[in-house]
Amino acid sequence: MRFIKEIETFWTLFTAPTVWALHFLVCYVAFAIYCAKQGALALSFDTLRIGLGLVTLLALAMIVLAGWLAWRQWGFGTDDPPHDDPTDEDRRKFQGFATLLLSGLSFIAVLYTAVPLLFIAACQS
Image 1: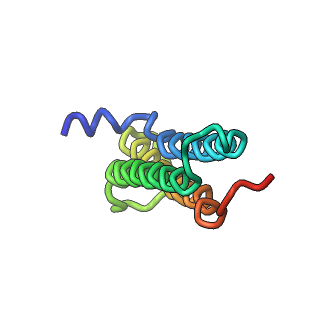
Image 2: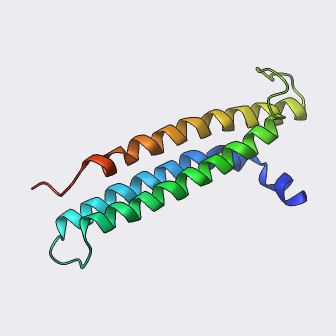
């Protein structure tokens, strides 16, 4: 229980957007390298897509975990926002609510980043 309390710091606010940014970077750099060095890599395009699909699932799982921790920090939604009183509890609830919203936005951003994995069948010159 103490471990979970230590996770609920200001840094949790940045967890989900950071996971999205890393996912975006990995996907686009992997495709760029693969398409630039097609003949040099002993890797099929479908293998790359499957690998990036697994990276996408891992990113989504990490964002869901961050969202769950944020929902827990917010108090499981028992109090309505804005949580603007100058108390530690309102600060914690505001941070949890903001983190939950960022987690939802990051989840959708990861899905949008992964959409090309479904539709692109090969590198285009």
